[in-house]
Length: 264
Image (cartoon, rainbow, N blue to C red):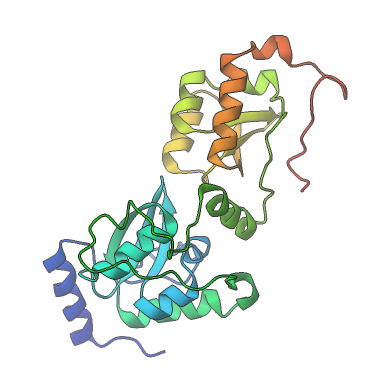
């Protein structure tokens, strides 16, 4: 696909400035070395189905701290933005990018392995114009992606297990590495630790904020595995609100349910 002309790029810049949103050029998916291009997370791209991209010309390019960044050519297209918010059930951050960049990235991600993005249901119905509450209220015609499915998508693309934490007993030493207040604030629970690594369950990939906060309390390298937010909340309640972890956790095959992060 040809590069956009300088006149076209200037037009996109004016559109972005008028809407008070950033103008970006998109890097190739997974390429974080281009200083003058906006990084694109190929996992985040798949948060919006290809059918939505084709219909609205929008593309999810990042997912961090619960916010989905969406690249668009027209930041005034409320229907497109409300559809993105309805599908992801997350706050949407908008950037303007040239149509050529959006198409290039979409082709590279969706055509690379089309079997991974097949949708079993019809594309979501677009919110009605003027319906300002569409991002917080999803009608029955919209494709509802609950928190478990959203995390499951990330886990599948990262080739990680989606942890089932029911009945799981975290290691007492791992729990002791991070204060309870930090665990509750970050929404991640230490599971086990070895000489170098602290394994944690979280509903999001490791963010800069999580990394900085964890490193303030431990020199172990954080390694995040994904679990639904509801499972993490239940585990936090069970660990910190019922029994002291050091009294409950014991070694040995009968002492507690063991988990191996390298197995599915």
